[in-house]
Length: 333
Image (tube, rainbow, N blue to C red):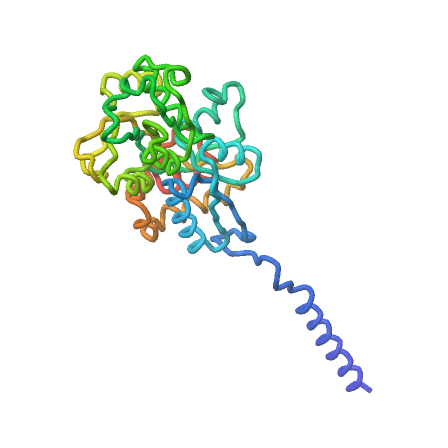
């Protein structure tokens, strides 16, 4: 009798164990990952970039792959967008978690100033990445040498839904040119503007990108493109009114057929995040992006500029997760 009872008990335990494996184990559910003393469920984040021909997209895609490959719980993916303004809007609304923008857009959005006057957005800075330079291009046959020569011309001021157009407008205004009435303004993506230029549809096109910018490399391959210069005196006046800009000189030979230095403005590119994204998620993103930089170093020349010190030097307030990482490694006190 005792043996029969024991057999029934063993059978019950085995059946219960099988039921737990079949139902309670749930192999399809995301497993928690161990990171130090904390367990995290698998997490996905989407990063808004720009057009696929721009530096935002190239760098974001390479960085996201590095983060995903090395993190135990975080997967980062990129989304091609119209650029900074759309990225800020999508991130503010929570449709995506993170985005790329020039530093001016992040500053205005986090302080409710500039183009976001009185309308502070629900975002904060994550990383300052690399310098992007303003580049006004024309054809060598156009006779356009300085911004003053653009008066009365057909000019692409930059991509729509980006803060890039603010830099081109700021320079034009210091030359006494109203960007809405003294020229015929167009708004196109980098590659579209350069294509319109080479096709003779417009006289000049402006964009901001890391040096060198792939779209410009392609457009200048035949040696027919020239770059429009700005005087150092004018650039200093622009910087005085817009402290997130700085002077920059594009080196001679950066692009085919452009053998002289070109004075222009530069601005830092930043990553930002929705304030409601978990602190540990942003901490993990920054950690993996910086500690695995070597794995995406060859994706673009500008990646060489990304360092912990640069990353922490944002123009705007930091997301708590990013701030925690920078303090932990000693680049913030």
